[in-house]
Amino acid sequence: MGLVDKCYIFVALFCLLIHTNKIVTVEPLIIASLIKKGPLYQTSKQAILSTMRTTEKNVLKPYLLIVLFPLMAMMVLAACQKPVINFGTSLVNNSHSNNSNIVEVDTLSVQLSTVLRDSFATASTGTMLLGHYHDNIMGSVTASSFFQLGTPTGTAGIDILSVYDSLVLMMRINKSYYGDTTLSQRYYVSQLNDLIQLPLNTNQVTFYNNSSFPYNPKPLGFTDVTIFPTRGMTSQSVTSGDTVKIVLPDTLGQHLMNMIYGNSDTITTLNSFLSYFRGLTVYPDTTAGHSGVMYGFKDTVTMRMFYHQPGAYATYKFVDFRFNNKANQFNRIVANRSGTVLGALDQAQAVRTNNIISAEVPSSNMNNACYVQPGTGILGKIRLPSLASITALPGYLQVVKAQLIMKPVMGTFNLLTNLPPQLELYYTDQNNQLGSPIISNGSVQYGNLYYDFSGAANTQYTFDITNFVKQQLSIGGVNYNGLMIGLPAPASYSTFNKAVFGDATNKIYNISVKLFYVSLPQ
Image 1 (cartoon, rainbow, N blue to C red):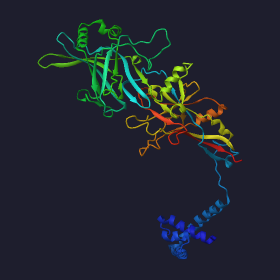
Image 2: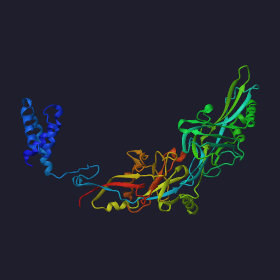
Image 3: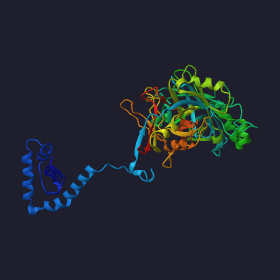
Image 4: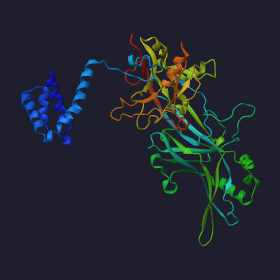
C-alpha cells in the first residue's frame, strides 16, 4: 500500500472520529470497504475526496494540516522505534530502566501444614458460645460458658406485701451461628461448686478453651428453643424477642427474695454474694435432636426475679442479678477429632517433645490439604521453601509484587458451614509462634473473599505478600519462616467457620503464589 493509500485510510478513520463535530460525514460502510480494499475501494476514495472538496468553506483543510501531519509523523516514528518500558526510579535504577522487563513467576513451590494450638484465651471476649455439632472433616465440637452474677439491682420496691412470681436466666443472641439453624437446641444451666478465680502461685493471667470449674451435675433448669439468628428472634420471641430464657427453681427465687427483704449482707455485699452464689455454667445437650449448631450470645446474661405488688390493680416488677466481671467469663471448647483426618493433630500433640511448640502435621499426611478453624485452635501454615531460588533466575533484579491466591476445596463449605468471610495472615517461624499480621499499603489485609456462586471454582481469597517476600529474600539462604492462616478478632475466638485448602497435588483448589520481578536483558 502506497503512502497516498495510507493517507486515504487515515483520513477515513479521522472523518469517522470527528463525525459528531459535523466537520465531515462519511458512511461507515465506505470507510470499512476502503480499509479492507473491497470492491468499493475506488468509489469510496472518490466519495471521500468529493466530500472533502465540497465541505463548506474548506473547513477540513486546517484540520488536515493541524491534525494529520503530526499524527502521520507519529506513525512513521512508531514504525521505526523499538517500544520502551520505563518502570521509574521507584522500581529500577535509572541506568537500567529503559532496558528492563517485568517477569511473572507462578511456579514457586508452596508447602502447607496444619497447626494445633492446644490452648488459647477465651475470656473477656464479649461472646458466650453454646452448642454442639459434628463435622465429618473437623470432628465433634462442644462449647459451654462459665460466668458470674453480681448483687441485685432494683430491690427498693420489695416489702412485706411483695409476692414472688418466678426466677429466669436470660441470654441474648448476637446473631452469629455455625450449623443447621432449623434444629431445636436444649440448654442446661448448673450452679458452680467453686468460685471462678485464677489459680494461685502460677503465671496464668486468663482463662482458656480448656479451662473448667466443677459444677452441680443436677441442673437448675433447661429449655428447648429454636433460634433464628438472621432475624434476631427465637421460638420464645412472643415474650422475649432476641432472648433465650431458662426458668430456674422457685425455691431459689423465693430464698433470694427473702434475703433481699431482710437486707442480708449476702445480698448487699459482692464478695459475700459470690461466696453464696459462686457462678453458673450453661451447656448444651449433645444428643441427636437437641444439637447440631453453634450459637453466639452476648455476655449481658441476666438472672431476673419477677414479683408483684398486690392490690386492686397488681403492679408487676422485677429485680436483676446482672453479669459480673468480664475477665471471669470464658468459653470451654472441647473437640473430638477421632476418626477424622484431623486426628493426626492430636497424635502429633501427644508425642511432641517440646510443649511450647504447637503440634504441626504436613498436608501430605492430611489428605493433601491444610485446615483452618481458629475457634478450635486449628490454623493453616504456609512456607515458600524455593523462594530464594528466584534470585538466580536470568536477569533477576528485584521483586516488585507477590500475590497469594487461596482457593478453598469445593465440597468443604456450604450454606450451613460457611467460609470465614475474612481471613488474616500472620508472620510465623519454625516454632509456630504467631507474629504480627501481614500489612499492605499500611493496612491489615482480610483476604478479599470472592465467592463464585456459579460453582465455586473461582471462589478465592487473595493477599498481597510483597513485603513478606522481600523480607525473606533479604534474610538470604534457607529459613523456616512462613505465614500462619487465621481469622481476625473477634471472629477468631467467637465463631467456628472453617476453610480447607489443597496443596500442589490439587490442581484447582490450592494455594499458589504469583510473583513479579524486574529482569534485565542478558
